[in-house]
Length: 166
Image 1 (tube, rainbow, N blue to C red):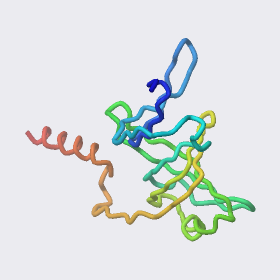
Image 2 (image 1 turned 120 degrees about the vertical axis):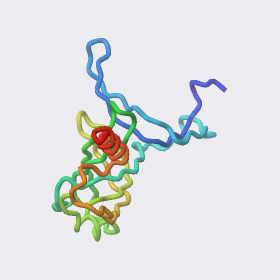
Image 3 (image 1 turned 90 degrees about the horizontal axis):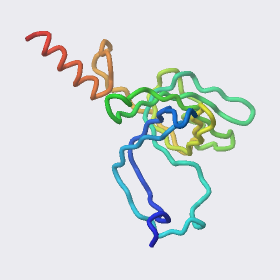
Image 4 (image 1 turned 180 degrees about the vertical axis):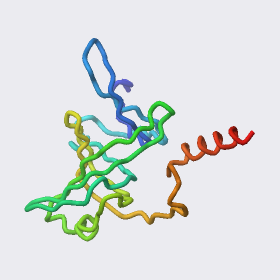
């Protein structure tokens, strides 16, 4: 089979990087794959859907409900490498008739820790996610004065503290 026509499913962590190619600014999705599977599908058999994503992050505002939908913003951060570990802001939404999501989305407050799944659409600088699932994550921080909740930053802080003691 022609390798250019092989359909694969890829799971992993991603980051969106802005770069320049031939004097044109473009966005690249940089991904560290954790699972790759060759699918026995033809291109015409693929569903016409957006990218399915799973995110863990914090709400950057309270949820807002209007006549037809619920909207909120989520900041999520994936560690790809030391240069690509910045926070990404996602605009989340679902329609009001998707009542299975309302018990949680109506209670989302600023800085709520959330686990979500949805369909990602890239529209200019907007990362738009139509929610399919959402849940709160219990906050298990034992100390309020921690500077970071990211494991790779905790390790860097610990190393710098150890070096300053020596």
